[in-house]
Image: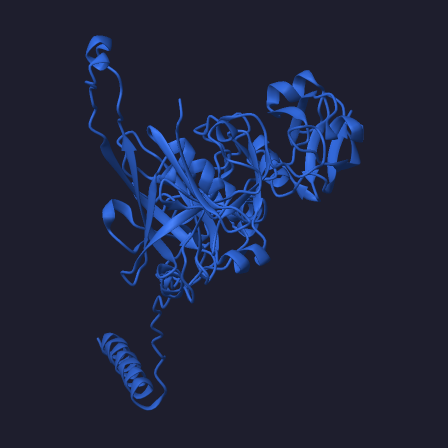
Length: 477
């Protein structure tokens, strides 16, 4: 019995000691620190920097810099004219008249200089007898047509005023896919509209221009563009002009996701040519081309799918004289890689006949460089002036001395008169044409446009070098 008591006493002492030890340890010694782990950075996509999350580019400067330099263009053209009906009734002086109809159009344009040069699309002003330009400050001016280039769908206008806001050229070659751009224009008569998007593709060929020598190398964006935006500005984030909005991909006629702009590399060259020569000086390689496809690469044992395939070369062409051959693969122009027909045409379009340009090719998978002297459509390197002859007459600008002596501010002089309508009407060489159908004539293009758009009779007014004024009236077929 005593042994059992000793055992129980020992057990109680052990338990008591254990509790006492635990109490003293927790009371007088440091307790373990509880560490709380928190997720300070939520999960993110690896391509998105934490500092940039949720931020978009600031496009306010680009919008403010461009909106005042984009104009509203309104056009008028007349359709319908007099025409004969019953010959018996005509004998007695009766004539059936079709009432003329006034067709109105609208679009956008971009001011390129403070003295009033404006670029737009050719299809915006095509066949227009009257072109009005509305500025962002509500002023309106009648514009005159300097020249057009249907192959690129670009036209140049001029209004007579000064100190205008204008856009400077950017470099469309520097645009990157995914880069933000703004489309500025006047869709649906809504002046000064700005929409934003990104560059979706470059050197896009849509096949919408049916001209034989057409150049299509559009910048594709997803900035909203609608009817009325044609001819408006595509600008980068610095507010520089990088394209002229021209077309949309749509089955309804309204914006459906993608829009297309003529790159400024093409626009700049066309504008310079129209200002200097009145028409575009188109440089040609003289080749028939095709894109390189996997099938074509396999058939021709090409080591790489790249460049533009030369199908054929014209006689008396720049390419032939340089030594290029059918089957060559054009891979660069002036040191810039080209990988499609559109890219090749865009690069060549930046030069004039007579310019020397290095063209890189691959022949039997070996690279070569050719120095090519580009030519015009006639096969030579001369400046083309196809528009100086109208109705049998060749024209030139009037001299400064003639302007001062005859007190003229505009007009064109007949420097050569061949057989034709004007000679038959009684006009003589050195006659200065100042007006056609009461419209002032500044350049040959003005004269040509008024003749082409006339319905019925033509009234030509002007003056001879001796100061004698004269006018002529005649009909055209």
